[in-house]
Image 1 (cartoon, one colour):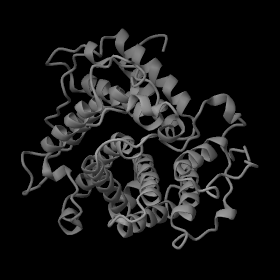
Image 2 (cartoon, rainbow, N blue to C red):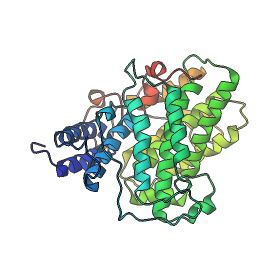
Image 3 (cartoon, rainbow, N blue to C red):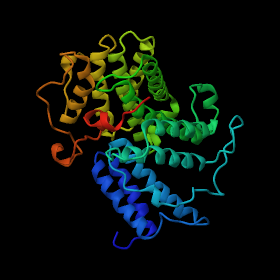
Image 4 (spheres, one colour):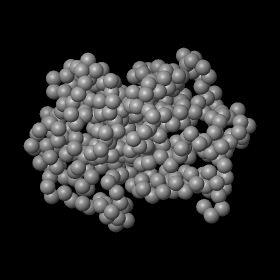
Amino acid sequence: MANPTLEAVQIAILLGSFHLFNGSPYLGFAIFGSGIRCAQAIGLHRQPRGSTAESCKVWWALEIADKYAAVAFGLPCGIDESDCNVPETDDDRAQIFSAPQSSGIVTSVTYHQFKARLYRIMGSFLGRRRQTAQGRTVMDVHGELTEWYKSVPSALKYDGRTHAFSDRPILLQMQTLCLQLAYDNLQMVLFRQAVFPMDAQGSAPQRAENIRKLSQSATRTANISTLDTTRHICRSSHASIHAGLCSFTAGIVLCKLLANETSHQERESWTESLRNIITFFENFPSENYRFATQSLMLLRALEAHVNPQASLIAPEEIMFHSQAQATMFNNVMEPFGNPAASAPADISLTIGPGTDGIDFASTGPLDDVGQLWLWADNGNDDWLSGFS
């Protein structure tokens, strides 16, 4: 890093991503910060049109990584996009996909362009959620997400029709699922606050509509977790962690819906969707990722309380391996007044192999299960408010 170059930034992206998704999110975050400073030192954040495709791609990859850290782990954004001027990536050599039912030409680069736009909308909002004068409300962000989704070509959307979807090239299938998972995950981040506030407010029609949107994103994510293409992603791609993070959030949302909406007409669908996500983690092909085991343990524990008939374990069998997991479990279950729905008092704080002996309490408020910050952070109710 002493000699900032394009290669140094590329190394920071690769190394930071590895640590972000392999149990050391804070180390990955620090490496991204070094990469951002290197990129700014050589002017990657301000590039005129006509700049090389490589330099533009490197900057956008760095910005997406920065915004993803904000979404997945609740970390601050290091890039101020208002100070950036970089054209979107394009490549004449990009593969053109055959997608006759799609609106517009779809290439292998199209996915990356829409992914960058998506994380620029949401990443900066979440990464600066503690600022009191953001200038954007939750509904502003929701409107931007809705407009973004309308602009996405149909070939990069998944509507649940598996037959038509399976006719697409495998790379296009993988890109479609990753983009759909990201969009639905961000919708869940927004609407979970509208449905599960600390003090329930808002009219019944408003809340019913918010539940519908939350349910739609969670059940679609659960459906995606059952696809052969998703299993292929988890066996062969770095995006396996992304699929796991989004599925975990959907599982938590489904548990909250089951616990809170005891007579809802979609309850059977939620139960089936939760079971699909648990099965996904039970068969997660990337055995080296410890977060899959942690996610499975948490979801099984929640299922044992919200739907004991379908659960394969009894509540008394639940054991957690970190205080963060126990805290998240209690925060999810606490609003429902079930005295049995609490984590055991004798929490084992052993994190398990692969943590290099790091004391969890000294590294921050998160374990490496993604998006625990959504449930363990008591201040969320202040920054995600204003649904109207």
